Image (cartoon, rainbow, N blue to C red; front, side, top):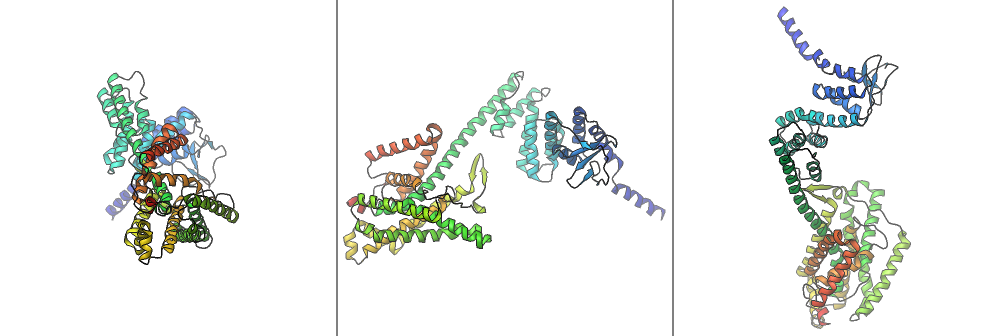
Length: 530
């Protein structure tokens, strides 16, 4: 029985918190009660190396301005918002002393606190927090964090976090004046892996008295990073160009049918885009008010509705106005310009002149990194959507009876009519198809532009440029033209500015058309015969 009792006593002693653990921060607690900046700094140093489970909470409370002390009780407390707790034990304090006041900080103390928080977080179970802590140490270059970094590196299993830890350690070694020269050179080379502008700034900020071999290694690493960043910047501009090209493709692809295939200069094409955007707005308003749980499906619901509304409006325009003006392109220009003004005023009267809010579904929000590329989900989905619409239109023209009849009427109207094809209705359906696709474009553009009565006016000129440059009536030419103009615009903007860049592109297209009047890809059909 006696042996059993002895074993139980030993077990209880091992389970209970021992005095040695509390002693690990007793000295730091006493220093925090002196109301001295230097003592506070010493206390932070002791906490960072104590390994005590309360160390992180105490330093975090100090960073948040919630750490308080009592000179009479020689204790430190944390203000939780609901009362005070003992900083050393975490126990609630029922009756705090009357002389409790906040532990003061100056800029030096704040900097040390942030650096210490970074080193204390290196052992956090969450890999994201460990990586963030390593990045914080990289910025602070606190030599006191070296032991914690070495301990974390020995245990780290996540490759990305291990890399961040190595870079943070290299930053400390690089600026450690008493470190061996060879180690500092290796550290300068290791920082190159970071590949960021912050790493360049760090490598170029070495003091003038740094040994020349170390400076040379640091400058070489900085130059290598800058060259790599320049390549990534080129790739980023190319991505922005593809993104702009997809927007131009969506805006122009419907015009490639009405203008390219039918030979109609449709100045109301931008208003078809605008109608699609307002259909999206109306769909979202209904969902917000009656079916809020379906908001993420608002765009898929709006796409067919926008196509139907814009397509029916297009058919109505063709049947009432355009049908009398075939073969008179300037007359169609004036007539559709008047229709565009009427549609703008109708929308302005119905919805008002102010911009309307169209929200983004959760799956189109946010961004992600691909190397040094920053890619937004919204733009990526618009590119995918533009290519899907393009592929769908190709399938309609190549694989459906309507597409076959459209091509027949385009190539030889008289023969198509003699074969029994109702050419007037094919004209109406073709015009409606082009307008319906413009409405679909409005759904996508509502995510990146203001939804207002003037929405379409910003894209009509660019749409005509894309169609003319790519080859009037050629869908593949429209795709190539849109992507080419998008990329060229994005590479010209940083050099010449947005306005001058557009002017240069317009002048280049005019000169190009002088040499190739039919665009990149020659058209075969009615427009050529006319």
